[in-house]
Length: 365
Image 1 (tube, rainbow, N blue to C red):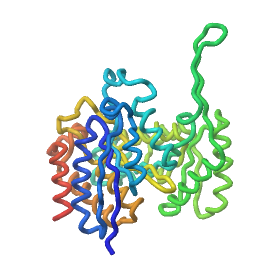
Image 2 (image 1 turned 180 degrees about the horizontal axis):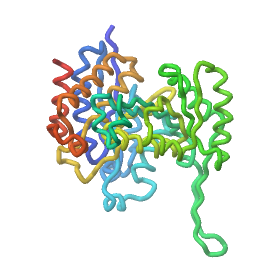
Image 3 (image 1 turned 180 degrees about the vertical axis):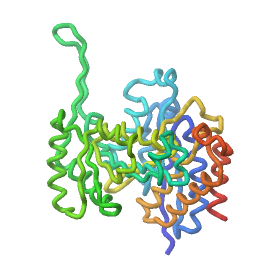
Image 4 (image 1 turned 30 degrees about the horizontal axis):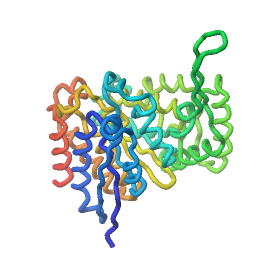
């Protein structure tokens, strides 16, 4: 019997609607082979949602997301000047993104860092560093740490202004992300790099204690410890040493963007934000308001997020692999997008919709 799934589509801001359009086209192109049908419901979310509806995450959008089987989310955020017109508590990250994560407890962020061997020339790193390609899975804890801790600012008795933010984790939060990381490592090369800062932070000492407890149940997985600043250097010097990496929220935010730089563009990084009951899927990059509406944006990360959704929310792994293969075929066929053009000067530069056309052509040929 054919299954039916409801998907909440949050186009977001800036280039969001443009790249979402291509991602939905790709979803529709692969749908006939999925033995499933997808019902899409669009809802406002982000900076523009505040101006149109008075909330970055409107109540009507929450209802759409509550009723969905999965959420497909575009990048959010407006220009610096436009953002200053929004109250701090309603700016997209605080007023929409963090509440979305908290509402559905999407505690595990999967960020695949993938550069096939034939596309290694897209990386700004030396050829010998990326020879053979890159295939890393960064797993980031997403609902704890500094980003969700108590925040306070004020003026002390001495008259000096201050700010205070709390980094807090409990053992259940750490344990659940560790289980996700060990399970992913077990599926792959059975090597897990644990990224921390235990030489300075008590939170990392605690993090590592819980990891050791979980590791007992995964004797087949080798754990390699690495300090976060050393991990940043290693991602540039020798990224191929990594397979699965696990880290707390802020470390993951920073290192995953560095990994995008290793690939050559954040436009090559889709992501999955997974909860026990519901997940959302989004590009790792921002909304690029400076190029919005110009048809220049690389839709790969949004298209890749569709593939992740098919795999992780709906168990349609073969169809997800078809999408990855189609995108790989487009890049491998001598085409590129403007964000990658400098690193691949001999390729034909495609706009947003033309790139989508090529992916669909590869899927249906």
